[in-house]
Image 1 (tube, rainbow, N blue to C red):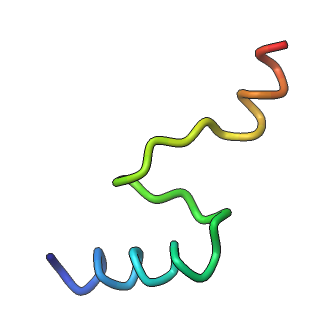
Image 2: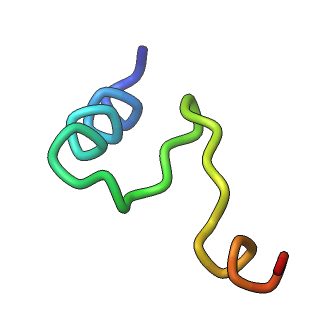
Length: 35
């Protein structure tokens, strides 16, 4: 795991709104337009 990945993982724990590549999430904008 690179330093960037480690920082990204730490940020994901602190801020759930940061998109993390290792957790599949549906963006709020897509969820809104999906109906």
